[in-house]
Image (cartoon, rainbow, N blue to C red; front, side, top):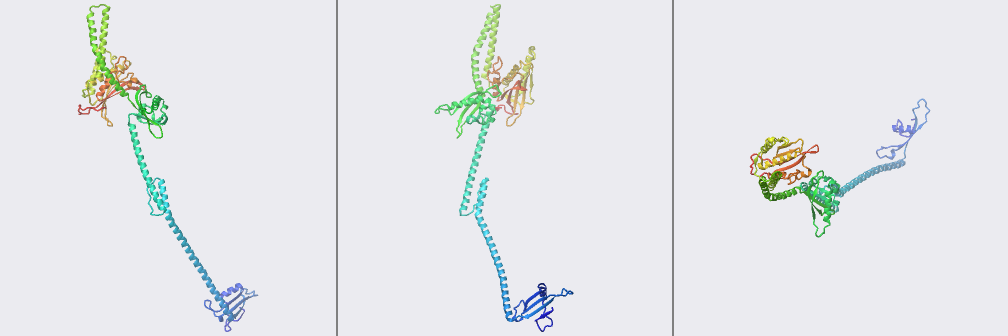
Length: 575
């Protein structure tokens, strides 16, 4: 500091600027400031002074870092200092107020912002609450609609509201309740319908009568198992197709079509509600025909034409009717023919006795031949009359407990003696092979009638193999154990290796006068059947086959077995 002026004249050291002022001086190269009083208190006018410091250029190259300064300190006049203080005070107040206004502004902004946030939050919260109040019924209704669409018809909890949404929810619950009741009723009706359908189907499946339901154009709509069994045709594969589409059913279908056409052509006033016909039907693959009793009628179904055809195999009924008719014929023939046979035979024998000694030569021989022929034919007719009598009036059976094997042994002893008497060759009487089951249960039977049955069966078998190069006749017994509610049974079978039965005779083999023998009466198996039925047994006739060809026949009789200790006076059940 080179020169200083003003300041305190009594100070020994000049009043130098402070360090802050010096830094400013070095930076700005000049300094001017009003000093005096404390910065934190009210300044007095008489204490103010003006400090001015300027930097002087320096030519000192030896000490270039030391600058030279000129300082002036001068008292500020009181008037100016008072005005300056007032201005400074006003400026300070302005600064304070400006600072307070910014803080207040920030405070107000913060308050308003917080208030806005709170208002928005409250508005959103209120909107959410009101939205929930409004949307909850709608969401509940939407959930209910989804549940109903998924099949859940349970009623939803109701909201106790008196506005339109409450009414809507209650109406929706009422609707779901009605739907649930309707579905329950529909389910009940469906189950009842299914039960009725299952019952009807069970009845149809277990009917022995064939049932066909035909739609428009006589297309097959339904067929029960008995219809398939009787017609022997794949009816289930013909569903929706006309019966004529199967070649073997074409005659049967034509009969049905003609019968319905005749039914429709009748006068309405006198028309019968159904038609009834008896037809002969030949099943596929069979030469023998069966007799079907067929009945048809229209079904009153709304919106679609339909008809039902019911038929049954009455071949056994026809056979039974034939048997009854032939029994009556046999009884009358036996009565009408037997009476004149004895006088005829006696007259022939008397002619032989009276004229034999009076004739000679050729006349005597002719008389002998004629009377012998008459006597032989009369005896043959008497034998036939006896067969008629036996068939028409079979004596009542006297059943007793007996062993079937023992009876068969007695009959076979007779055939063995026939094969060896008078030097007869074994070829005239083929060996009968016996396969008798050991420990065979007893049966309840009439020994005399059963002996006749065995004799008839063996004689038929021997006659059947008479033309065979190798003749075999077999008689066999088997014990059939009880099974599935069927009692124990005993089976007697007679088989041979003859030509068997033809298809036409097989179905009617047990009917009277049905025979393949040139001179047979056809009463043998008919008598066997009657005796079998008297013993509550069953007869089965079948051809034996080998490699697709008939190689013999077998007749089986199945008797109820007599349990050990059973009372023989108790009637046996049918097998």
